Image (cartoon, rainbow, N blue to C red; front, top):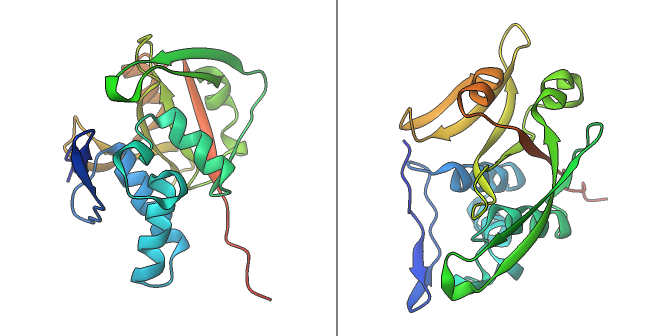
Length: 196
């Protein structure tokens, strides 16, 4: 099921490491699936989830990836994901101030135009992470989910959906149109190196 605000902590409240498999928002759904794909048991799942969610795996509120732009940057830098490029990108600058305890944060996001994403479905793989860039100046992304395909090869979005109140697969084309999405970011999860 969909549930917002499942993480516990704040600027004046101790951060608690939360692991759930029953309720998610869009980001915690992506984090949980990505960590589970990398894990072979519960301890390795928890270690992966800490590393994906927190800078340096440090369970502290200020180390949490509060902005999805920071989430992308850190998970690329840490080798969990790599950016997927498709044709010309547009640089979108965002300056975020909420939550205020984190101060001003500025990001330069490489946005893939919606029409390029839809025209390049052969460049996408099941499990790629799509971030939907917000129109609002004060918000970096408004949603995220995974690329998947239906039985006919149609490009789909698997996501923890607020409107459906659960994890669903829905047409990517329809989702982009209904939400007026102009630009997206695509990340590809990286495979763990096999031991020699």
